[in-house]
Length: 241
Image (cartoon, rainbow, N blue to C red; front, side, top):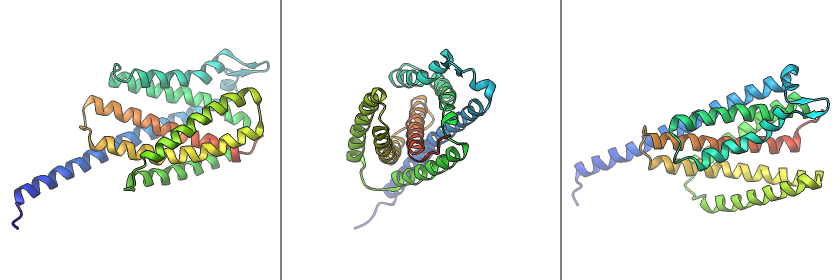
């Protein structure tokens, strides 16, 4: 049978364009994620190790108003970005994402009051290694992780409910179990989210506003996977002061 070289060349070029578009999209996603993590790490370190900044959040009598704001504001940012995705422009979404990373960093500064700096740095490094491995798995595997993702999302809902209950129970055993499950859930979600984003990138037109907005939301998803993995590991293995 004779092969039509023209058709084959067109198919090869189209396949190459899809591959290039996917890579460009994923580079965009990871670039914004790493940028947000850097901002968060810097803000967390500044507010966690500088006494004058720390006293803006907590005092001798307990949490100050600003402390409560930075604790709960990140939830509002995530909800605003998620539900306002279609209405918000790319510029506004990006500003919200950067602001969220700043507020989240200030919020996470409380870990410096609870855990030793050495254990924070070690746990961060372990988290980065685990995240990197699972991100690579999610990007390279040919196995469909959709079913796994659905199971992990149900487990995440269970964790949230258990966390709310334990907020009132204040059980150390329950907290340990939730953290242990959290490591499993967010490790798996990293691979699932990377594969999902890879599939999105393969069908997205690179350079247009909607694709850029998807990259920001993808970066937010991976950012949350990493932060929650880090916090779960820190609760399990972090050395308290």
